[in-house]
Amino acid sequence: MPARIQTPESLNSLEVIQVVEYMDKKYPNTHYSIANGNQCVWVYFGNLNLYFIFREGKIADIQVD
Image 1 (cartoon, rainbow, N blue to C red):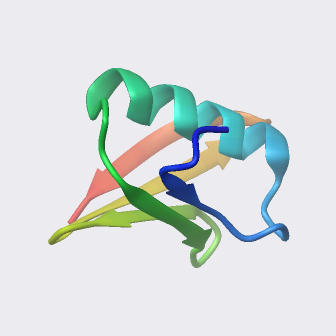
Image 2 (image 1 turned 45 degrees about the horizontal axis):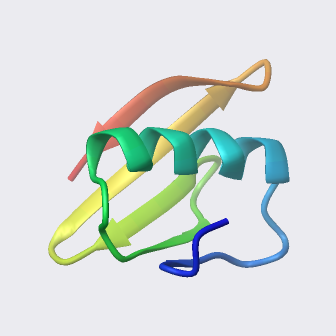
């Protein structure tokens, strides 16, 4: 994974890979952090929060706050 990402080891690595791929396409060259959310993967940077919801091992929804 690129060095610009901070992520805890406790996250599901397959979910993290999908999140990183999405972020690289949508927000290239952005520094962000990934954390465990409330039944989701939480990505935050600047004043933007993204909540990745997974079902059956795939991204089912992304909520932006």
